[in-house]
Length: 356
Image 1: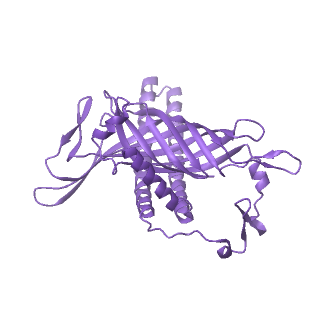
Image 2: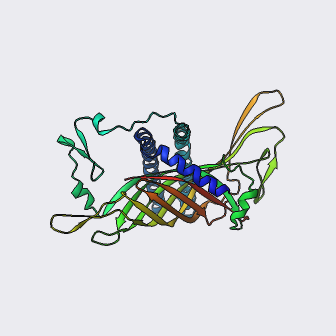
Image 3: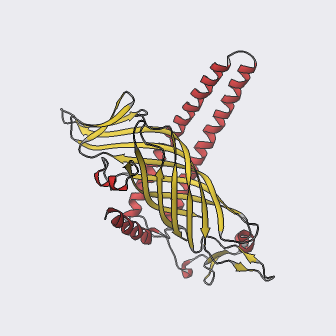
């Protein structure tokens, strides 16, 4: 029953959100900021690694010391990425909540309201730019590899021992545990000529939130982590894991191909039903726990706890999506346990937008 309700809610949201250009522009802007931060820190890390290697070659440090310094440098820059991206992620969360609540102005316009420099080919459903912004659709559609910006949002929770029925007694709130994903993918046609089968691959940032129920919070006890009742009444108890994932899918794009004047076929993508089957692997960038409550003096207290909480440093799993044009339903399931020494695994179901 929960899954049926979830699907209905997600598709209802999809109908409302599908073509909101203002929302798309703002999400893309946040993505570009995250990409700049990542590239900058990666560049700094690359320079630092080169410096350490040079010191090792000059016999200033041993090989073991070099490995330790490299690991420390990688950890430091990963934490810098997470710290800087955190504010942008909060901005993204607020943006999505406003969009779902219909607080973002619908920027869709009919052809009569479009500027003179733009017209719409109604038969093909394509936007054509006049003057210096003229768009050569035939050349673009002949490309074997294209790129897409990916945004996904939905419900996040856990499954024990691979049993879907375990969701019925999950320790986490079903509707208040969410996930966000921002990424960039490349889509390559597997055959030289126009077809419907593609390899889709890239990289993405994933934020998985789990909101504990029954006034509990995560407590680390040696190699184990368990939920414990808090002494105060918690208004919030949320665990967040941040990952850098590398997804890969075989995508079947059923968009109808066109024919050129010479009779050859020309690819048209993201114009019809799309189905993606594949998986992902990634590394954890960090873990945070957020607690909100009132202390004995009646003061509001907000805690942000940083630690590993015995969560797995690596993740891998299966994922799939079914979409129409840019918008679809998305499912991800971690095969790697969320916590060490447990059989608890993360599952996510939500909406996925592929902006071609």
